[in-house]
Image (cartoon, rainbow, N blue to C red; front, side):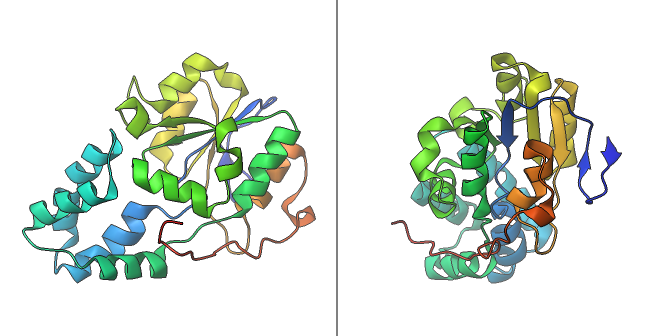
Length: 237
């Protein structure tokens, strides 16, 4: 991969027929990083090693199959041996979780230009539902194919996970896969996909960052996104 002038790491690309997006760290906060690593450890008087040791198996259990938010937090309480303050958790979310709502305009522009969109993510079922709601994607959700770990039973890089399934469904060379973790973009590239290792830049929305790659428009030509770092009401509508 080469380092692009705009600071995004990407490999050279021919035509793109499908935009495959990770969610956490791309257009929505990585819930694990923002809530657990930065907040839950302090509030439960745990070290980061303890959070990772206890939380990793819990996340995998609930992210790789059907789950509810109540069952998720009950698993945490069982592992910690203590009752969690749910109001405190919601406060953590309100303070730390962001959503780049330009993704809705990006997805619609993809559809207008004949580019399909799909999600390839290890998000849990209940968090995915909220991510769709707060990002404004619910109206077009029926047009977006989801290669989610909670639907497939495996993480995205597993031989039967989202990336492999996507590569089976489409010509990999026509897919642009966007993720914030290098291990995931390398796995996608090994399957023949075009990739972009995405790092959020101050004041640049996802739509602006991808416009030149997808539509031939430089970021400066795109309207600024006032909602770039919008916090949102965590309560389900």
